Length: 463
Image (cartoon, rainbow, N blue to C red):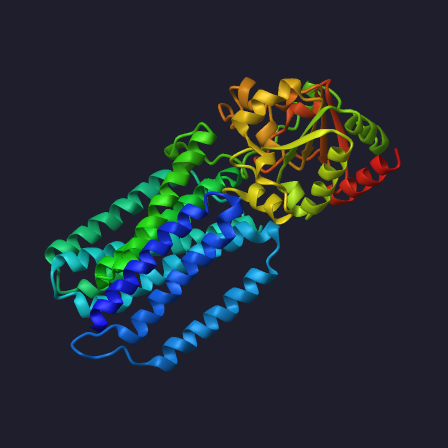
């Protein structure tokens, strides 16, 4: 009876994962989608703790189990409540790394129990160890790079070193699984160490502008590692959850690569952004930038028919999403059509700008994807760029020597007027100059995004 009840609970939990994932596809239902999936996970955890039996024995150790759950709940809740939107990408990366670590720990714990059983079980254990360790180490490096504590690092021949290291890992894993030598434990822990090392060197050389793709890829790794744990324990809900995460992460990685017009191989070996040298002469070659005052900006936007706002990481850093929404509502009260142009890789993680604006209650229908926005720019009066850089850089279309050449961008230069808000003329995250800033239709509005927007709102109100 209890086994049947547990199976039913796992079935319900699996359905909630699928439904929750579907609900995440739209901002209006995303919050409830998280709640539905969390309810299913809670149900599965409690069902496993109280109903799972092996050889007529219950789990036991309830004080350790619930102690761990309590500590994790407190830490997770506090971290989620205190994190700033600008730090959300590194938190996502850190939490993803914890998932990989869990999968690796399962393999480490179960190795002694299952090493003498069917080679199929050993294969699952080794796969969980390797993939989980790579995901953990890579995610920690990504977390450090996103918060600025770890710099891009590469050396001559690093990609060859990485390939050779991966080859050694695969060879040792094959040797362990097929022959099961007497020194199996030594080889197993060597695999653990080498997998951690590979995870570190796998992410270290990847440029900052590619970090959203890397985070998505590592997320898929964690899902696959969790699925290995599901196979290992014959746990249907763990298997379902791992497969969903792995599949979703893989699809998102592919979509983001397409958005950047780059192959995954190119992302992994291209080292685009973050470590490149700034073209110091680009500003001289392109011309001299011109500035615009707040009052002129207020007049220009107030009497426009159509205005597009392009949010970027600078908006997130300044925590200016609410001020931006206030500007949008003020302009609309004056009869101006205001929408947002969202580039797929704007920010530091997939969907960063969408989440940021949703926090400020910006209606989802006002967020236009790149293809839609590009069709609208020729009939747009004013484009206001808030902290975005590389995603509006025309070099992606015209400069074959640029590292971002071929990446689809927002064609903001097609609008009648382009106003760029930045703190300074420093290059963006990819480390390259933006020739858009020196074009005839572009004006620079320097300052912190939040203060600039608040002052702009005050100017418009005084017109």
